[in-house]
Length: 217
Ligand code: SF4
Image 1 (spheres, rainbow, N blue to C red):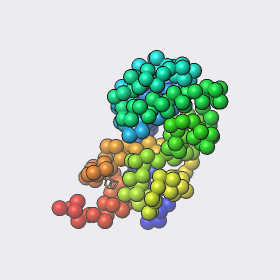
Image 2: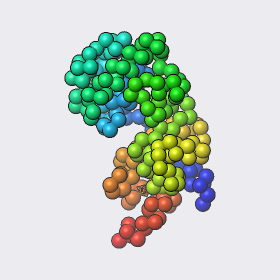
Image 3: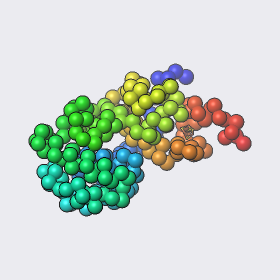
Image 4: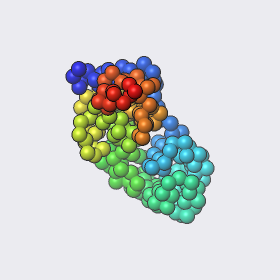
């Protein structure tokens, strides 16, 4: 099987059991989503979804959030990881978004990364979800799962993973594939112990086939 065939097999299988994958973060505007994605670093979507309703009710716009004190933001997000840093990033991001981008999130990945707290992964999520661009955001799940399956070879950084993935995934499937890899990593191909016995892509998975003896026992 060629690498291109492996990609198309995985896309076909993912499509069969999850035809319409989407982010598990809840949001009602691009600004909401940007805040949620910043909060989601090293934190679960479930936790972020518990935090954002009160936060966005208090500071619904970039201007309102820029005028809040870091301490006010901190108090609303303190149950997530790294709340002090994230409160600072949110205030500074909202300030720049209001002052320099007229409250409009830029659709360019490099421009987006000028916003405090916005790295390449966050910018790619926004590009894909809000602007429907064929961008691949590589988080810990995407990085691990694509390496285990063998979609990506010897990638040392998320950027290397991103570059290899976008070479083979058709543009129109990029958005879905991002979610499929995340959901697969979150619920099946778990970090410590992958649940291979319920996985639909064992036939093409490098990790499974290399460790077949272990799984057969
Ligand atoms: S077979 Fe196992 S290691 Fe491979 S993708 Fe499925 S769950 Fe992950």
